[in-house]
Amino acid sequence: MPMRVLVVDDDEPTCEMLVAALTGGGHEAVDVGSAEKAWERLQADDLDVVITDVSLGGMDGLELCRRMHASMPDIPVIVLTGHGNVDTAVAALRAGAHDFLPKPIVTELLLAAVARAGTVRQLGREARRLRRELADVRAGTKLIGKSPAMLEVLDLIARVAESDANVLVVGESGTGKELVARSIHDRSRRHDGPFVAINCAAVPSTLIESELFGHVRGAFTDAKTARDGLFVQAEGGTLFLDEIGELPLDMQPKLLRALQERRVRPIGAESEVPFDTRIVAATNRDLEAMASLGTFREDLLYRLDVVRVDVPPLRRRREDVVMLAEHILEKLQSRAGEKRVNGIHPAAAEKLREYDWPGNVRELENVIERALALARGDELRIEDIPAKVRDFQPQRVIIAPDALEEFLPLEEFQRRYIMGAIELVAGNKTRAARVLGLDRRTLYRRLDTLREPSPSKIPASSTRRPRHP
Image (cartoon, rainbow, N blue to C red):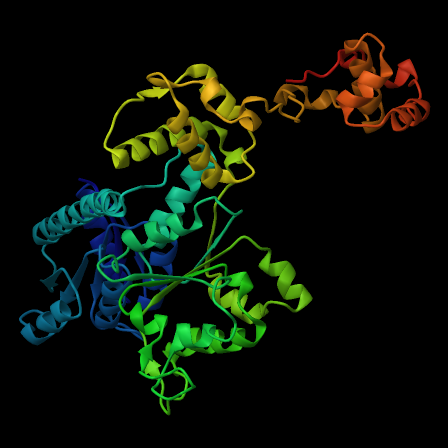
């Protein structure tokens, strides 16, 4: 199987020889002259195997091995050693190298080593795929979606889960931000560790420091025993800080210091406690705007927002609504231990798709649970869903992408829209005002101000009224 191989050696003739041998063996090979440049290349490119000499100027090959083993252990490293240098070979394996080759390099041995490394790389990819599937089973649910917006989120989750970088999950209430945080945890190397969550808006400001950092016995009136904070409780796992925008301003510098130092001081303690915990925070607020107003620390925002996952609202992923509804229906029925409803009637599914879902997935769950409780047949039908969904009328104008050049001036669009409404109700302006959401006097004022446009200013192709659902 062809591999993408990075060769790291400060000796140019050796690099040229190795690249030629690898290319001749059907692989794609590139070379760099230092471990520092190799590290930069690894951050920016998708490579399968690294071949590095031990003796390099600056960072040596063993240090590169150690860094890769810590941050990207699925990329195998082959270390080049001096002939018969057993100590160097052992040190390379301890640093995380997959294999080593003695110099001078024999082409057949080189290609065989790359083939073995390629097999390890493929097995690693397969293991990650199985781990993702296991994570879905372990969580009992999974992120559902096939829309472009959701596929982008799923891809970002898969990539960021491999690292320990802090993540900020942003999105409207009810979009599933905690589920995103759990998915990141379950797909990470920390999946066997605890997932600890706290809602910063639900804890009184007087208790939030004790919750996060812990306290010693006697630190305050009710501290009858010592207690570890959530940073320590989540050791080896993930701490999820939900509604981080609600964190009191006086707590923000303390949280910032904990994130910078990777240590916390329990209330009343004389020494700090180190922690090894990944931080995922979430908010439905605009933290940049809060930072500009001075209600959220800008430096804390930068510390939390290393990688941002923007969870789209349900109205931006209408392709997913029915799929989500069916998944929720199946989950609810499996809990109840019964299978009396087998699906959603197409007419009801269309109503679910059209609705704007201001409450997002949380509102959809509520609607499906209600519909399941009221369903009479073997399908969820229109009459089973709430009136607000059943009777919803989309307020958006449907304009085909190829009609963008036919956009009208806003004044002319308003005039045609109002005149169209009056025409639909046979000239009854009182009824037209009610349809348009205006009082009768306001409608008359609009009619006075919206003058008839000059025909020469309106393109002939724009004379038709825009379509409305």
